[in-house]
Length: 125
Image (cartoon, rainbow, N blue to C red):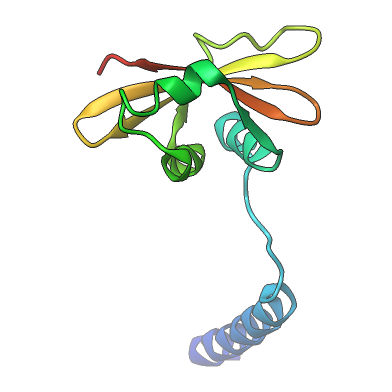
């Protein structure tokens, strides 16, 4: 078998395999959240969020609302060095994000059935 025939057969099988793969996985919400940061953000996003009165009071100060919090939970950066991940009940995660001209940090208490935003502070660059 010549080299061109091998390449043609390989390409044909590869294309058919891709079509079948897209057919089976096309309608599913499959995601590749393998890293610890992506898994943590996805875990917090999947739970009902509770916003404490202290955090609600600092929304205006930092020009944040609930839609910005949802956006931060998609594109934010989890600071594991500042987070408390070895607690017995609810872990505390610090999520840093750049919003407009300032950096803010959101403090989430991530429990088994809910995620509570309890503090918002200005962050350092």
